[in-house]
Image 1 (tube, helix red, strand yellow):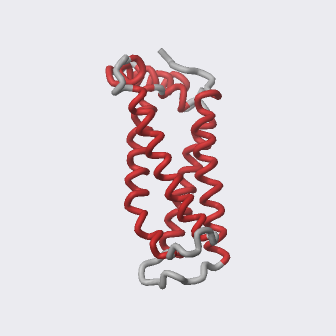
Image 2 (image 1 turned 60 degrees about the horizontal axis):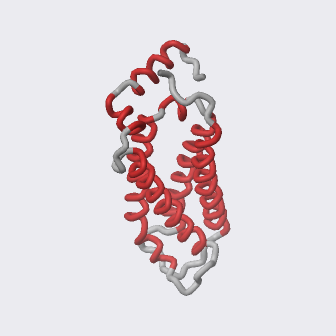
Amino acid sequence: MLSVSGTTVNAFFIWIESSAFSAWVRESPSVFAFPSILSLHTIGMGIVAGMNAAIDLRILGFAPKVPLGEARRVFLVLWFGFWLNAVSGVVLLIGYPTKALTNPMFYGKLTCIALGLVAQTLIRRRVLPDGVADEHVVPMPGKALAVASLVLWASAITTGRLLAYTWVKLMSI
């Protein structure tokens, strides 16, 4: 259990879990509750991780006939996927705050996501800046960023999936 003050943290979890919205996410038989929220989270993750993988693999030399500059065009879709994932993730967290916030794996997932976003931003700014020719040679630091990005997004997916199996305490109420 997290300890800022065990009772304060536990009271916070109880407060969230007692809300009507949290109960609806967890308990509603509606397909629009947990199943749809989880599906949206999965779709968002697929967009973010998939688009990042496509960009990273192109930087590493796969699909060399695809102009590298075309990778810049997918960042808008990539950010849509990220925000879809962020919103659905917060909703899932509201459904089971104790399950997530008492699990170290959850913090590992958030760390991988944060570092993945840093890698993505560095790739966009340093490897794929506007105005650079489409067929420029990617220097080794750019390739290292691409490898790091692949590892970070794969780790975010893995740690996220492990959350279903590694929780210690499901609820506080």
